[in-house]
Length: 135
Image (tube, rainbow, N blue to C red; front, side, top):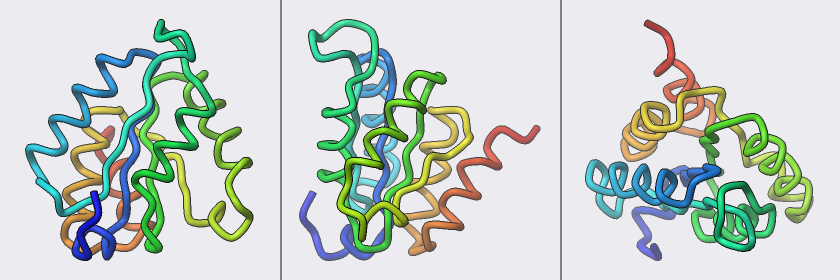
């Protein structure tokens, strides 16, 4: 993901305990926004089983990095905790430009990516994701 259009938009990272869920959600998002949004995923533990891996999350943030920021969508509390730890490991100047969205992972990721592809800033991308859970 190295297009100038994509770098002008907020990046999206999907974090799941399941590599299949993370990869599948990213594939759905990619079908909707093509290459308009920097996108990455981190799923599974360091052995490839169910769980989360802080190192993989840091790498995914780097892959989806945009100067406009990165929105993380997580599936369960452990993924949120690991994502918080990953953010703390980022260089200080990047930490404030990474947010964890309180949203359902699939619906939130799709809404966040759609908003990002339209050029929205990080706060609006986060808001769109989080509104995905409002009936």
